[in-house]
Image 1 (cartoon, one colour):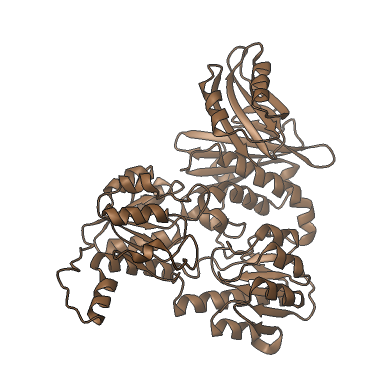
Image 2: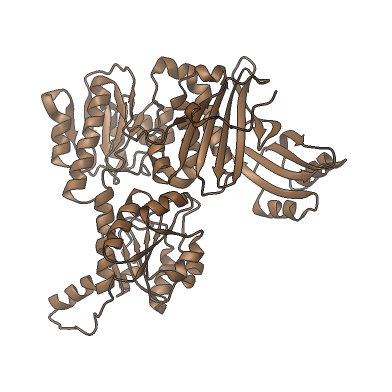
Length: 563
């Protein structure tokens, strides 16, 4: 009997998980030598005092070190505290022979090579949510500044002029604010904007309609629908391949003429060259930037010459309260890790102890792959995820596995901010319900995982298990079709017509494109009907190859899955 593809069980059999927050604590027994901590970037004095409390840690503050100097001294330290300036590269981590913990006093870990840290066995922790209010307030301050030309008027007055007419502004009242990204900061900004009588449009492909209603914002389906309606635009997306240059020349041309734009999120969300041209032409009336594609911007930065732009030097989280909060939070987390073996807000650790981790690790790996796979099949806006455990899998500590599945699934929504610690909170933030089921149903497999994602009336699903004694993972079900696929590398998924010669046709087509097939799995519902073909490939087909598949009368759809 195959893995069940329907989950018609009473709600009393489900465990609703989305209420568990990112303050969950991972406990792991550790044994460290007398620990030394290097504070490599400025953090609050309260944070340094917290680290130094009781003299149980030796704390060295040495900021502004170039990489070569950091590499020289890092071997003696058990923990490293950074903000955004210091780059914790693979070379630094290679030299850090005694390093146990990297603590990022802030949300993003863009400046930390998390993969290299994981490979070296170094825990990476951050402080999610510590600067939410500060960043939202800064974005709103910039919104006010470009509405009323406050910085320019101030500069004019200091130069001895009285240019009342020149700096006439606009009201926020009855204007439309378009927010791109409705995470914690976008949500806080929306509340402030509505208090000023603004209409708020929100674009977030992962925000559910029910969550949007509770926030009292108008949810739009795509950016291109929002842009022509917005008088102001504020950006609050993570920087991913999908969001890089999301406001480019084409989209800026779609905006209402004279639109005002704020970016306090990540440099690279706005194409700075296209923004320059739009400011020059008047298509964009004004802009305010706190983040840049290159930080600090070079001396010849073209936008410096524009009169209708406001700059701040990445000050979103730079308030006394935010710096004190994140400084204390990361200090407490590092003390807990080095002195008590208690790990908080780790971005690269499951919430289980070392002994259990060895048993659960194959499930975590499979779960992450299933989450990544189904994320690339599902629509962006979803209501519910149902995770089902069957066979021996019901005996596992399922929390860590569910977190791995959700992390893989939500990486597309939250970028690197999503981790195994905060993933449940992230799901709750976007209105995604998460249910966990332990099934007693007998199947052909001794142990299995199944993930179903619901968006309104539509559903996509995937199931996985292990083959052999070596816990060799396999995907064994996709949208109800029995298959056998290795969850690694590049997978090409085709919905094709079932006819004689179709396998040779597909193979010949890929061969002509110099793409080698590692393995193939076929599944059909009836002879001569629609079939599902999944191929593990040695290299990824380009967009031109996918377009050729789409034009083939035998192929209904073609999708590349990257694992």
